[in-house]
Image (cartoon, rainbow, N blue to C red; front, side, top):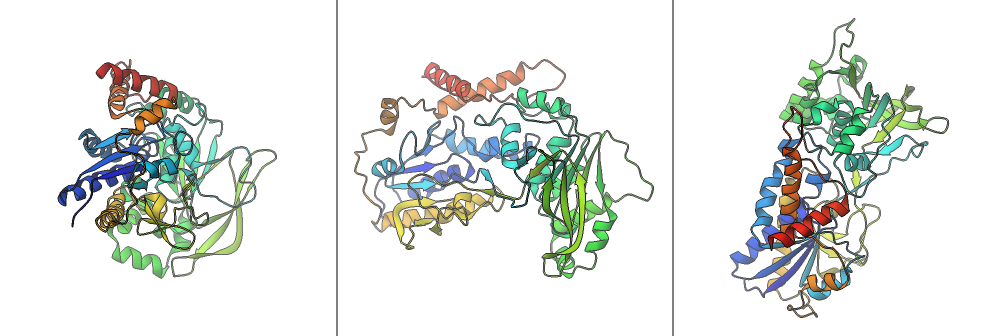
Length: 469
């Protein structure tokens, strides 16, 4: 296989985009070719979901940053941050400058939950809350933490993250990179009870075992489960089959059952985290703001699904967080499937409304296949997309850029006054945040304190990069 010299743009500097760049560089090198890769990111800093979508008290997952750092630090991929596609540069302009463009923009907004009252004040999407507690620069600095009792709707890891952050004592988050404004907001929270609700039974939760087990390790928070939920789910053949064939399900079932309490048990902690199963939300109620959530009790039918029982129950709460999944957003100038909330594609090759591949346009990650799977799954996803891109390059079907290779896209951004950031700038911001952690006064050791303001991130990044150069 013979490859031409390639110029490739990747849009999105999260795990999906970085993995794609690394695999592309490796594949092209294996065939003796040459490629230059520009990695565009709308935020001033890289790492996407790892920096702005993973709960701060998950250093194990955030450890993935170390491998992503190595990939970018090699110099084989050029990071161009703080650049919004469709505002600072158009998709067509990228296609004029690069043989191929790969979209890896992820899924950043909440999937809808269509129940009456979902828009009442006090009802929130988990994506916005996660962005707040992770210090995303484009969300408000303050969050209305005024509720004593809170409902979290969903049975996946994001629901557990949201519930855990809400229930956890803020002092126990100080060892993380939690921003100062988030810590102050959580300190002021009067929360006593956080309720997590799932439509299906305890044998069908979408948690991972480590996420679930961590709940039982939270200081001064009692985990409360309800015998009637387990009894209603008993005898479900689908759940029994899962338990027999899946070790993760066995571990989680054992963990959940260990939290069942004897008759007469009373909580002793100052806060409680309740796990409810077989509850389907039907309405959020309140006079001008959230006051309760109404659920219909469900029962399993044996094939993994549930049906309503006609029994309804109201839980008085003052806030509701929906954590029923994420959805991707369209990009200007790129086809988008509104129903599935993905860029339409065939194994990573982007297609138009007729199903015809768009030459030189690709997708990977959640924008390609929807928000399913763990972070590590993006590697295989990127491999599929990049394999097709390299094959298309070898076949000579990639469009030839009309803008000369000597016309650096950075010059265009400079002309437009775009304050883009670079890898050297990220290293400066990274060092600054670690310095804030070192300077923290208190008994807790802090690795870093995250800078939240976009303007401050850009200023530190750009001035630091200029100093280094």
